[in-house]
Every structure is written in structure tokens, then in C-alpha cells.
Length: 120
Image (cartoon, rainbow, N blue to C red; front, top):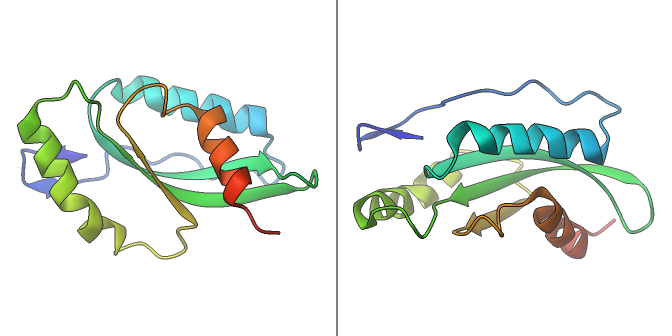
């Protein structure tokens, strides 16, 4: 999150995914995380666990930029202008999502997009 309109800070670290993480357990983790910040903008690094089209299980790290359309324009500008600088600090990112509506910030929708983009 961006604290005091100046500094990007880690708000919360999640537990490491267990080796046998299921897609449904991963969705529960995702939904709990969403409840924690509600409609407030956030940058999220999330380790998705999902089933590929060939029925194998995959884990992919994704960068999610969440900023609801309902957020004040000043906040939107701060988050938008900081996103690329933050993203460059991380290695191993497989994909990126920019979500501005709660219908976009759904585990099932993000997984569908990851499966669509996935190459085995």
C-alpha cells in the first residue's frame, strides 16, 4: 500500500503456499486477502495455484494493481504513477493484472486469464 501519500510499504505478508495447494484453497486465501483491504487501492503479489488445461497443477506469481473506479482521483494518480517503478523491483513475475472493478478482481476470472495465457 502507499502510506501517507509518499511511501510504498508492505501491509501484510501471507504464508507460503503449501506444496499440495489446491485451487479452491488458493481461492479462499485470495478472498480473505480481498476482504482485508476492501475498496482501498493496493498492489498485490499473489502466488496463484491453478489447474492447467492439461490437468496439471501450476503455480504462477502475478502482480495485481487494484484501484477501484470509485477511489478519489488523487489516490488513483499516486497509485498509477508508482506502479511501474514498483513492478521493476520484482523478478519472477509471470503476469500482471490491472483491476478497477470488483468483477475483475475475482480469483476465478484471474485464473481463467492465466490459463488462457499459460504455456506448458
